[in-house]
Image: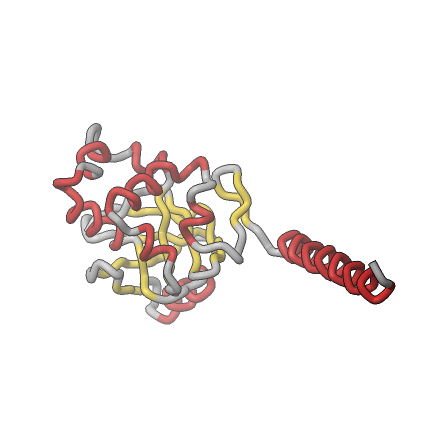
Amino acid sequence: MNTRSKIAVFGMVALSFAFSGNVAAQKMKEKTVMVGGAAMYPSKNIIENAVNSKDHKTLVAAVKAAGLVETLQGDGPFTVFAPTDAAFAKLPKGTVESLVKPENKEMLTKILTYHVLAGKYSAKQVWAAVKAGNGKAMMKTVEGEELTFWTKGKDLYIKDAKGNNAKVTIADVNQSNGVIHVIDTVLLP
């Protein structure tokens, strides 16, 4: 191998190390939020992050059963209010098992899309809307109905169409295609 070839090979090897180092450094610099024992990376999409959360296994299974995986991997942006497994456990016994059956896909889709807003709304933006609305803000979901947002002390709450209240327990989990806010109750249209 001549000197020129050796320099070219050395240059390519050095560039590949530099590039891989930059990618690793970039991942390390990302501001992650821990959800369900896993780091949520802003460079990953909603599905790529959600599947790693130990607290959202039921939600991920429901999203798969409803056929919404591709949608939530799309460009968005989306704001997702993500109920934990404990939130799903509050539903009457057998509800989740019934909803994930193929014959109930339409109802499951309706419930899941009721947890999604088109656009990316940070907790700060929702708080500002509540303040501007003299203590409450209404926002239309992808499902078509509205959610009511309100605050108490330092906490942000959501009221669904049935009158149930969900508390945002982890806010502003940024994603490449939107944001997730973890909630403690399943919202029902």
